[in-house]
Image 1: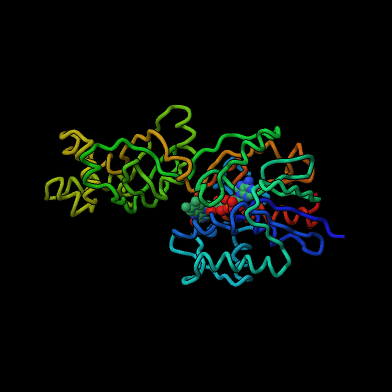
Image 2 (image 1 turned 30 degrees about the vertical axis):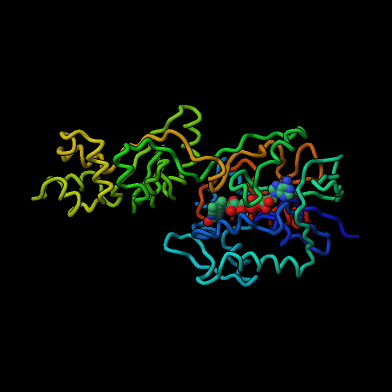
Length: 397
Ligand SMILES: Cc1cc2nc3c(=O)[nH]c(=O)nc-3n(C[C@H](O)[C@H](O)[C@H](O)COP(=O)(O)OP(=O)(O)OC[C@H]3O[C@@H](n4cnc5c(N)ncnc54)[C@H](O)[C@@H]3O)c2cc1C
């Protein structure tokens, strides 16, 4: 007789787990509190839909905090495996200039989701929608908000993080788990915008303006890309990637100093030479020779004294390392992802809850962190596949 397995939550991690569970061994049911699957997956698809990243697996593994947290899952199912599997279900992918991996041009996010859903339907996975998990009655008997109790041989929770509540990933499970004596930590916004106290006139003239081809430097780590000046402060991939270290320091000190390199392709000494040799005045040199944007020039004029602005050495160093003070982060609900959640000491090496045998947790609900750019979806997919292979008995424990 088959074993029953209930997967609670119908997002990325859940779908990939269901896709790789052996349907000759398991009767699989996904319980989702919304009326459809994968709403956060679809939101992710609204912008650049980075399904994974194409860098080598050695580099890939280093993107995760705490170090090594995703190693086993990625060894089991890496970025190339994910691309091959997507191809197999009818979703070819391509590597963009950023080395991020996207569905082939013309394929919409809903088509990616539908391809995965169809694969699950064809293998007999059942779906129960509008089913909100509210706690445990006893042992493996779980309760839903419509008073229905379900007892299965195995329960897997894939309830997501605590941002973009509208997608269903509302994080309410945190208190349910805490009440059941399972160790949790508060959610922290990750891959989010950060607050900067911009002078009013700078903001009035430049809100919404991007800083293109810049680098954000923090704690010895350099992230090239783009950020945008917003009413709150700064948002964009170059700062999102520093979320973990910025949030850690914000917690300790209340504010954090980062640096923006306006021209990462030039060293300070190259910039100094350009400034020194120019026959134009400083502002024209910045505009026409160094090719800074009006926003960057306005930043230099606003924040530097007149003497420093006219001093080629100081100016060159500020173009390369412009200091910016971060005073906070965007609200949790606006973050692309959240760290915190289920503490890693709540589960064993096989994602099994220490205090609940045959009950497992995977995906963003666990307290790991990674930059956006494909690393989040890949992590959830890899954990799903890894757990499926553990439960199938494909991996020797
Ligand atoms: C704007 C945005 C852009 C993003 N872009 C990218 C990107 O380009 N690349 C990338 O790698 N990642 C991206 N992400 C992140 C990525 O989408 C998530 O990390 C990933 O989908 C998390 O998968 P998950 O299965 O752990 O959780 P989720 O996908 O959040 O799924 C959890 C599911 O559990 C359900 N649920 C929660 N509580 C209950 C309950 N009590 N009972 C029943 N069901 C419940 C929810 O309704 C939800 O459907 C983005 C996220 C956002 C918000």
